[in-house]
Length: 134
Image (tube, rainbow, N blue to C red; front, side, top):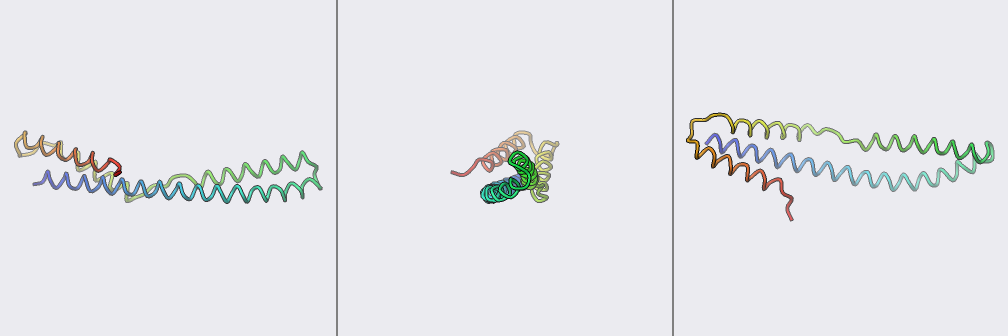
């Protein structure tokens, strides 16, 4: 019975981990695309206005160089914001899954053939949970 509980815990932890990881990945992708769209539009308009203003005061070459420097700074800030964050719930689910699976390999009082069968069933469940649903 203990083995089935461990397999169940491992399968549940795997499900939680996969759901959390996919939700975070989707959210990051959508926010990144939105930021890129607004950023490109804003930069195009700001660059035009800034270049016209700087060109009158500094000349065309210096105006272009200053705008390129500003573009580099904006790109750096956006890259820093797009970094992935750690999810404590996903990390706990991963730890629980690893712990449950490691407990399955420790010696137990049940007969070896039943232990192998239970381990095979558990690994099959985990493999099925990992597959994306069509």
